Image (cartoon, rainbow, N blue to C red; front, top):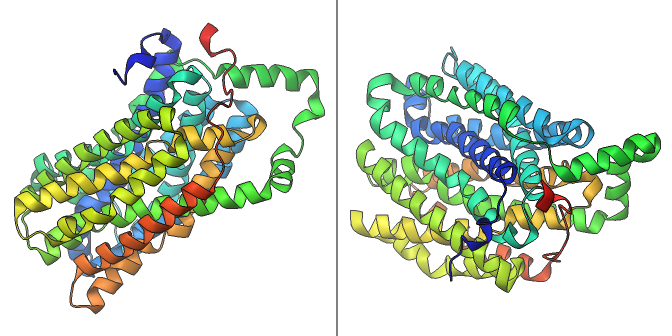
Amino acid sequence: MNPFAPLKGFTPPQWRAFAAAYLGWLLDAFDYFIVVMVIDRIAADFHTKISAVSYALFLTLAFRPVGALLFGVIADKFGRRPSMMASILLFTAVELASGFAPSLQVFLVLRAVFGIGMGGEWGVGASLCMETVPAESRGVVSGILQQGYPAGNLLAALAAWALLPVIGWRGMFIVGALPAILVVFIRFGVHESPAWIARDKAAKANPGGKVGEFMAVVREKWPLFIFMIVLMAAFNCFSHGTQDLYPKGFLGQQRGLPQSTISKITIINSLGAIAGGLVFGSLSQVMGRRRAIASAAFLALPLIPLWVGSQSILGLAAGGFLIQFAVQGAWGAVPAHLNELSPAAVRGTLPGLVYQLGNLGASYLGTFQAKLAESRGGDYAFALGWVIAAVAVVLGTLALLGPEARTAELAPAAHQA
């Protein structure tokens, strides 16, 4: 069975929408993971601990819901394209400014603003993509799209390996401003979502039709809204809990590995993540979103001892590959799952907002893990392993208990795009 078969019939506008959403998330993640790759150097430069700099990760995650709401409302009112371009310009401008931060306090403020731009990009890009591609391709597209995140991690690891010794941590943030170029491609190469265009025409025929729609949907479907937030909190604990402190906390501080080895292991981890997202994203089109998510989450449990317990470089690399295969395998169904569960009138806002509110719920996890490790003499293996074991059980159980709408029609005009 060829998992890419559903992509063969894509029209050029569908390919470009897919590419824009994927690249937007990849470059967004690249900018986020630069902090992860240089967190120890920032701490050394500002004469503080890693746990103090980890508040930058907390603030980025905590402010992402602001961006999801702001840019989601813009996307539902004015279209997916202008909202996506604005979010990319914001996060790249702040990324550039981060490289010139004169103090830790200024750096933390900038990373909070970065979170607003980052929070806006995912939901809008996913909606643009899912409303444009054919329904039968959503599983594999979802798996590939979400893997822009580990691909961004991979790109950050490669940049750290090749450039960090030469340009330093500040230079890494200057390089991180390059995603602004993507705005040109979106402006001139990407069409607006056909589903949004159809709804906009209907709204112009009935000017009062959009007033209070978002709050009306929340009031009517608040149990679903709350469930989606809790589910995404578990998802974000699953990913950030395995990624944010693993390179420099576990591999660097606890195991004492050099930057070149950390970068190579991170690259291997990212390849596992990309493979997992593709495999389970494709499987979700056959076995359903809930069962695919739960299967990947539970798969992580027996892999934890190898992931943080192996005493060899080869074992650590294998454990990292496999744990990220499971973590991002679970994530592979998320773009499709959230968009399918969201009502059409608020699809630009709701998927991104629940995703980022879930991020808010998980935003302190990195700092919690760092402090837990420090309280045990730098035992990051304990802090990462036990937390992720609990999270995997919670995520798998929530996924199985929740709703699913795999057959929902998101883009009735997609085949004519």
